[in-house]
Length: 180
Image 1 (cartoon, rainbow, N blue to C red):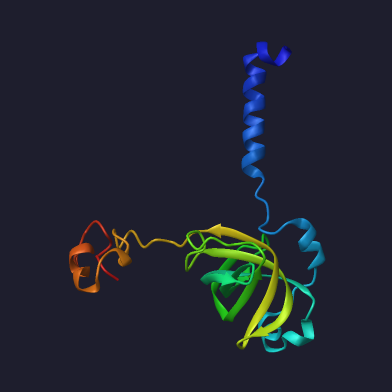
Image 2 (cartoon, rainbow, N blue to C red):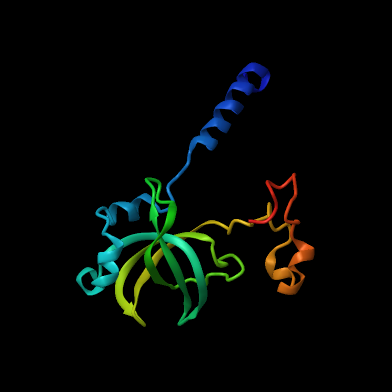
């Protein structure tokens, strides 16, 4: 009752709650799985010798290349990237790709190419020469970045011969000089 009658106290709790909600930037993978995969392995070594690390829980991330049905779930192909301290993929490609076999169905409408994901999974070996993980947790982070500044209409909406009509001219003072 005391809070309901005092507008200053209401404002304080509203600001406190919002700041708490906005400041809680959680990592991409649950803390329990992070502790289980406490020691990270170099991706080059892991992809070269997966049998050495078979049965070990690892956390990898990157950009989605494809997702397809596989057994009872989905098979996600990911272009591997380095992870920052909060386990978000950053930087350029770091030397290869990996497959993540998930028991859950991953919607291909969400997991489109160039989407950012993080996978916590157990090393299973190789499939068709590519590192295979049995996914325990797959976290969708962000959809692909659309090049809206230079391509106002997505490229797959028009055939290549009409690109001239749907992209800015070579010189456009409002678009940093036009095409790149």
